[in-house]
Length: 333
Image (cartoon, rainbow, N blue to C red):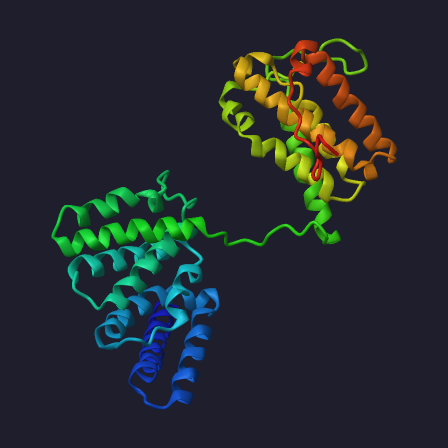
């Protein structure tokens, strides 16, 4: 078995070097495209082969980066970031890239950029990987510090790493939720149920009987304060209400009922007035677009929302709310 693995490794390395040679040394465009296509397929090899690919990649990468000339830059160079099934293999490639950059600070600009982009991609995808209780891919500051403490060329590389990593993490890699796709409504329903259960959680151990008209206060943890001060949180739920099917919108209103019931001590007077203003403005939008209210569940939850506003805020606070005029409204019309 050991000899078989070694043979696979040698064969894989030889094949990889041949393809790299064809990619960078041939003047035939068709041969170059075929080589790049084969390299992409090579990176999609099964786990039995990919275990040796990381070592093959490191050895071949030195040859590639040493003889390559701009502006040739294949997309498959970033494939190792998603190739390796184990974090150990990804760590190995990542460390190789860092060492290569550290020992060769005067590489061609396009080579340096490609390596930094690869480091950023591997770091992003391995951010939650844990090895022996250590999140090794999060040691970015330690990785970059050695560059910042060296020559000017090294400092430039270090700053570029931070810039590229920030840009890489800022890019969403998943698919957006399509509210018009019925197949995704189940996911949306579970997300709304999760939100409601979090907002409905009994944080202080005193359950409230919602069948009564008594004051109901949601004891939101203080650590959540920033999320409720951010008006986009409320805006998200009101926008969802107007965007999703009537069968799901009662769950949104249930969440809004809980949000409207947060404890008063979470805000100071100015913050509470601003929060109430956003709530009332959202309620006004629902009344201005009542298409979903004929649904009994929506109507019931909307009435509960109004009741919570009435019970959790004083009349003097409600009358001071400055409502946003409807579009096209003119006081002289």
